[in-house]
Length: 116
Image (cartoon, rainbow, N blue to C red):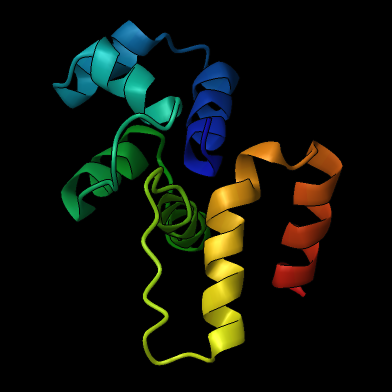
């Protein structure tokens, strides 16, 4: 699940809305929304993000937060290190190779470092 998927599920549950109800309101399939929540869909279009914000009556800062989550939720990341140091390139490649082997507490610690 992606950060955006977690947030969408939280919004739906807070409102008591099923995938099917939300899908009908947005004119998409429940399968699409499920894939979006589970990180099996790519980045949202600006239009789709606006539709979701309108559906949940999200404005201003909360809409900006949702956009940031959407930007951080792409399931297939590409990192261009061509202008970076050799160490940065090595870091990106090692992370790509090993991320699936990291324990949750290691991921949490690394994420906290990157956020600070």
